[in-house]
Structure formats: C-alpha cells, structure tokens
Image (cartoon, rainbow, N blue to C red; front, side):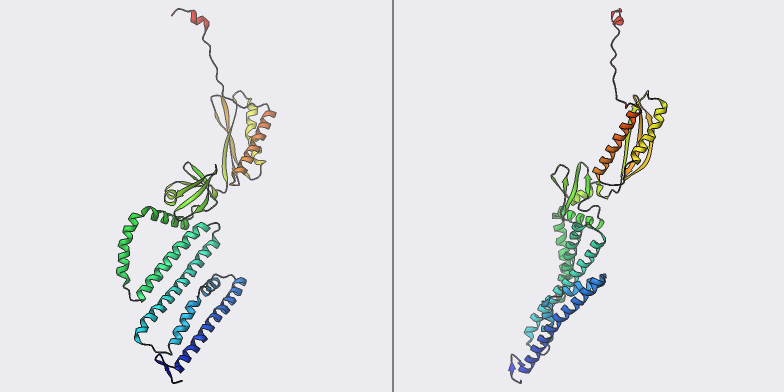
Length: 349
C-alpha cells in the first residue's frame, strides 16, 4: 500500500476510489428515495412546498453528484499545482450549471402555480417561462464568470453600451418582446377570446413573443405584432358575461290609445318568457314623423352571440303575433307624390 503512483500511495488511491464509489452510490439512492417519499406526500397533500422540493430533487443531475463524489474523493489525493486550476474550473462550471437547473425548477414551479390559479393562459405563461429562463441562465453565467476571476462589472458595462446599440437597431423586435411580456403579466386577453381591433374581428389562436394571431370570421388568419396590438383599443368579447340589448318597435300614428298602452306590457311579456334574460324596461320612446316608437331594453345572461340571436328571434316572433292579434299595425315609412294643380297650370303668370 506504500507504493507510489502519480504522486500518491496505493492506499490513498484506494481510499479515494472507495470514497467516490460510496458517495456516487449513496447520492443517487438518496435522491430516488427522497423523490419517492415526496411524490407520495404531495399526492396525498398537494402543498406547494412539497411540490417545489420534489421539483428541486428531480432537477439534481447525476453529473452534479458525480462532481461532488469526485471532489470528496480527491481530498485523499495530492496533485501538482498545475492541475488545481483546471479542476477548479470544471467544478465551478458544474456547480453553477446545477444552480441554474435549481433556479429554473423554482421559476417553472412559480409559473405553474400561477397557471393553477389562472386557467386558459398557456401562451402567456410560455412567454413568462422564456423570460424567466433567460434571466436565470444569464445570472448563473455571470456568477460563474465572477467565481472564475473574471471582472464582470466592466463586462456588464460593455454589454450595456453594446446593448444600447443593439436595442436601437432592433427596437421594433424588443418592443414586441416587451409587449408580449406585458400581455403575459397583465392578461388583457387569452387564447380563445374574441377580439375587436378597429376594423379587425377574430378569435385569438396564438400569443407569441413577436406577434398574436387571430382567426377572422371569414376564415383567414390575422397576424398582428404585439406592439401594435397594445397600441390599439381592444374590445374583448371573451370577458363579456352578459349582453345588453336595446331594440325598437314602431307602430302607426293612428293606433288607438288603449292599444298603445298595451304595447309595453307585450314587450315585457315577450322578454320575460325567454330563459337567460333579465328584463330592464319598455317605454314609448318618442312620437316620430310617421310612427310611434317604443324602446325595450333587456340583458342576455350569456355571452354567446348565437344564443342572443335565438332569443331575439323568439321575442320578435312573439311581438309580431301579439300585435297582429290586436290589429296593431307596424309603421312603414311612406312618401306621397303631390301632383300639380291643372287649373294652376292654365293661369297666366
């Protein structure tokens, strides 16, 4: 055991090998055992901390455990100074790579928790996930460089100046990226919502980093950059829980007064007879040039447009039936042509 190989005795090499085998066996077994226990407890009691611990354990790589076992084994050995720097660099790279994996698991856990509280925002969460991963790995890379002895403050300053130049060159792309992040955080709409953007109407199909895609009523796809979209006035019909409806009925001017008093009640009964409606009012709104105009207002307790049209059609048919039964005629605009007086034509000027 006193024989020397590569500057270390055979006994030291044996202790290092046993240490490596021990830790490289114990660490994976411990990870598997802890992960299994946490999985069982998280299934019975789905607490956020248990789920987070399980994600952190799963993200612990075998390469990191190999590095830990190697580091503990190397404590029994001595190497020439020229080997210390490469070994330190390799260990630091593996350690900060593992730290990045842990931070990524933490970020994904927080984003998944947000998804659990807010349904239907998968596209927005993908944007948040992308930004979070970019920040995590940027920070991990900078910390690795700092531990390797690189002065990162001048590097950050240089990147800042270069970043300004790049930002000016690609400001439209960065504007769309920041707009996508704003959409992800503020959530003005989600996939499946029906939007009105000026003259454009469509259902949101995809929310990306650069653009948002809508499917129009006529079938074509509308692609709008996120920056332009946030500058527009957006009407989101997907967030509409009820629809206010106002319609008018015009009857002839010569309709008897007792019949006119019955019309508001006719309108109210026609509305209340429909399901998913809430009656508001019905009045004789105005006396027009050729008609008496009644206005009725109600709410459809469903955002679906087809449901509204079915209800309005049923109301219209019932109103027509009631008016015809009472011999109340609807007003129709008419024009009267006045012929010149023949006698006046023969009179001298």
